[in-house]
Amino acid sequence: VPDELGEFESNVSTYGGRTSYNFDWHTSDYEKSMSVTADANGNITNYSNYSEKVSGKKLTGISKSEIIAYADAFIEKAFPEIYKTLIFIPESYSANGSSRYSFTYQRQMNGIPVKDNFVNITVCISENDTLYIRNMSANIDYKTEFMGSTESIDNYVEKYKEAFPLELV
Image (cartoon, rainbow, N blue to C red; front, side, top):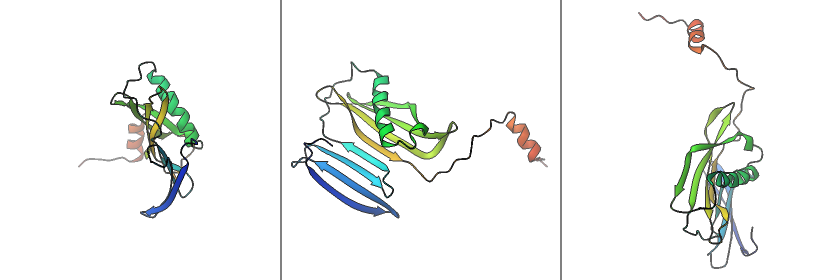
């Protein structure tokens, strides 16, 4: 948290049986702020940074791969225990306006997407031409259990028909 964000506020909320801890650092005039929300286990669920003004210019000198690498480094810090299961989804990459780039990481296990487990992130360029994370929201079910490695089954339709023979009458 930058030193200039000297004011601090926090609160606890409960919705649908889930407890959230909300932390907000800001300047006294609220012109700049940083917010983090965590669940009851300390897992980050939301992050926002309004400490930088968006420049309004396109990231002409920065490549798509650099933007993704910057977000990836943030994701690794925010989700160290599940980082390797979060996979960048290329189709989700979009330019929102001239200097905001948003995309999604989907949690996957054994190459299969885990339903409703994802992280959305927005990377921006500030007035001084540096990248920063503007927003991040995560929907991760840490209680999800996975079996060991799954086998690829060749001819699975035939094997299913053998195991469960059906006859249309």
